[in-house]
Amino acid sequence: MVQEKRALIFNYLFWLTGFLLPFDQPWINYALGLLLLFFVVQWLTGKYQIKIQNPLLWLPLSYFLLHCIGMLYTQSQYTGWIELSAKSSFLIFPLLFSSNAISRDIIKTFKLFFIAGSGIICLYNLLLSFNQYIQHGNMSAFYYVAFSKGMHVQYLTIYLNLAILFILEILFDTSSQTKPIKKAYWVLLVLFFLVNITLLASRLATVVSYATILFYTVVRIISSPNYLRYSILAALFAASVLIIDYFAFKKINRFEQVEIFLKENTNYVDFSKTEYNSTTLRIPLWINAYEVIQRNPLFGVGTGDVKSSLDSMYLKNKFTYAHQNHFNPHNQYLQTGVAFGLTGISLLMLMMLIPLYYAIRNRHYIFIAFQCIFLLNMLTESILERQAGIILFCLFYAIFSSEYVAAALKTVPEQNNT
Image (cartoon, rainbow, N blue to C red):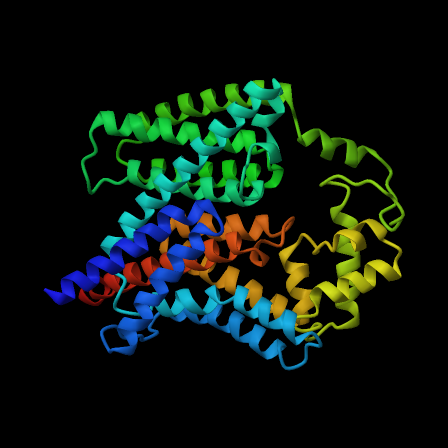
């Protein structure tokens, strides 16, 4: 009886974390804090045991260890400890998913709560935008940064991308009989999330979302016995999405910035400009980050000296705009390279590519899509420097790697019998 109550409390806290995940800080911190407090108390009293049997979980643990090692040679210890605490998810979730507290059933429910939380945050953004439109009569309230009331647009787009993939997983699940009315509800929710992705207008994240959703849909249709019916439905759905996007892009098209940027003969090493947009800013930031890496190629500047090292380089190159705003490189590979040099970049790539290899080998299509989502989005954003990105990556990396290992172990007896 006590054991059942303990499991129930943990399950509810875990599901609450999934629901509040798209809400960003501080709500997710409260839920995660309660979950970890309960887990640690149960672990200290011997109710939960931790045993790392999943080899893929050693990769995020190693990434966290690298941040600990970086504390040994960083100059700014205070900033280093802040960075280390921010990266604690690379330690927490591998340990959590190596315990006997997590079961496959609660993960399935967790995904449903995550979808629900994503839907609520979209409705919240729409209601606030509508209120702003009523007050000021400006349609820009429904677009880009003005539309996302809490989370950065690229991060929220990634969240909605994952929510759509989870819905598609439900729709293609042949092990359960879903009623037509419920399927229609899921399809409408996918369309609703896609409309929100269009309104968020994060260029790369939008492209990656469409690409990963298309990839997952195609591979599931091909492997489905209802190939023809799913193909027709998918084609009709894709046509409706294209129509929505066509009219949305006619109103405001952020991809025009890229077109203009590519046509201009820009001097990328001229850092004297006083105005930049999200397109023109990135290459100058990357150049400065690369110069910092060149000075510390093997092990970087350490856990706590990334910002100060970049600011010094901005000052040296008279990149006043970046120095005043203390920008990070807006590229996770360069961000990790500044902190830990080629050692850090190598470990980061291993953490992304090794699971991707095994996911492809085992045909774990959502895990493939997940790794690609982060691999690509990290090109234009330091995704693993904000809690919205760190928690999302570490949590679902642990979930998908656990699902992969469970699926791989399930096939072992069948292979032995042949």
